[in-house]
Image (tube, rainbow over all chains, first blue to last red; front, side, top):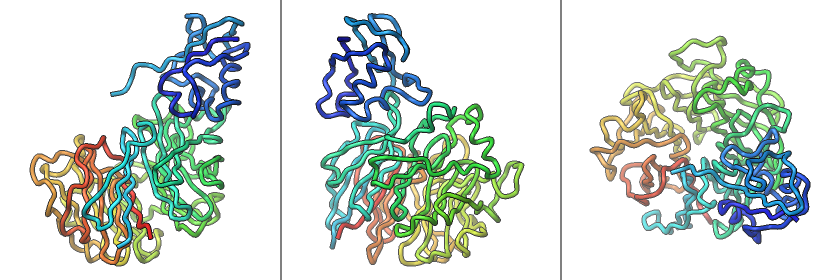
Amino acid sequence: MADVRLPGTLTPLFPGLPRRVEVEAATVLAAIDSLETKWPGLRDRIVEEGPAIRRHLHVYVDGERAGLDTPVEERSRLDVIAAISGG
Amino acid sequence: MPKTLLTVATRKGAFIFESEDRRDWKMRGPFCEGWPVYHAIYDATTGEIYAAAASEWHGSAVWRSKDLGETWEHSSEGLAYGDGDGRKISKVSTLARAGDRLLVGVEAPGIFESRDNGETWSLLSTLSGQHGSEAWDDPANQPPGHLGISGFVTEPDDSDAFFAIVQGIGAFETEDGGSSWTPRNSGLRRDWPSDWEDVGFCVHKLVRSADPQRMYQQNHVGVHRSDDAGQSWTEITEGLPGDFGFAAAAHPHDRDTFYVAPVDGLHDRTMHEGKLTVWRTRDAGSSWQPMRTGLPQENAYLGVLRQGMTSDRHDQPGVYFGTSTGQVFASADEGESWTEVASYLPAISSVDVAILD
């Protein structure tokens, strides 16, 4: 199971969504789609038309910058980070 | 007196104000998790509040409250051009009820509809085929500030007939639910070249008066009136301090009374001479009177955006507006005098009013 860490901006949008979730997935997109099945609408909050990761979010797999098709291993850590922006 | 409800959209969430007498107001909020909200409305058909919002991090969604703001949910299901389209939705800009359709206008320009009160969405029209649409449909051709659908004029009980504004292009009318469109810009002024006679106008705000034949608009270059339901326009700017502005509101009972809030049209786009002023005509634009009582008359360098002013439907109507610096002002006497309802909100995108019977 991959260990998914979500940003604090995301969890208030979906009742019951924790900051850390474990999912079974082969890629970043599959991991997000897995979360979508439990929290409908979550995919749209991370993925835009393209599909592509939204411009002000970054995803890392085991510390390396990742795209939607980046492989996820059984014991991977997947971080979704909200960019430091706004004001 | 029945309760009056103001729904205010700001750069940091939505706020709700309620009053029994239009003088003492109670505020609730912020809602929508502090997302930038571009337009929020109370929908009398369902009794629900809808808010068009777009987070820099998490994209666009329409928020919905079924209990006057106590609880909220959000959806963007179907609110996308699709992975192969090339266009992206950078913002949901404006909302309106048209019969059983809930409409949302987006950037890049397109109209999405919901037939289930905001749970799911589908693309209704991009106004493709209209003069200029090749340019506004080209993702590479979006100017700074973007182009989008910036406003609607609808009838709450008619699903098929409504107007939509394409920013910088003009107003269009459909009578068949968006299958076909007719430009409604005849007689408008423009101070720039255009490849077409019927489009290339910068309509900021379009409103219908108490008489469906009588419409008004605040344009990039002038205030205009139509006496034939938008088919032709006559400029009525003379008497105002300038021709530029965004906000406009019609009197709900008198077709000849109309309000605008002109701002300097150059770079600052703030109130002329720093005097916060709403201008009112009682004679369909033949003359204008400044409505200033209770409004700051010095050092008020602020603006009012296109959805930022509205009027209620009381026998003696109230007029309301929100500013770029976070104040909400209310008048319970048709603009004769004003009170400051809120002073320190985030920059305000829209103010909507409803009477709850």
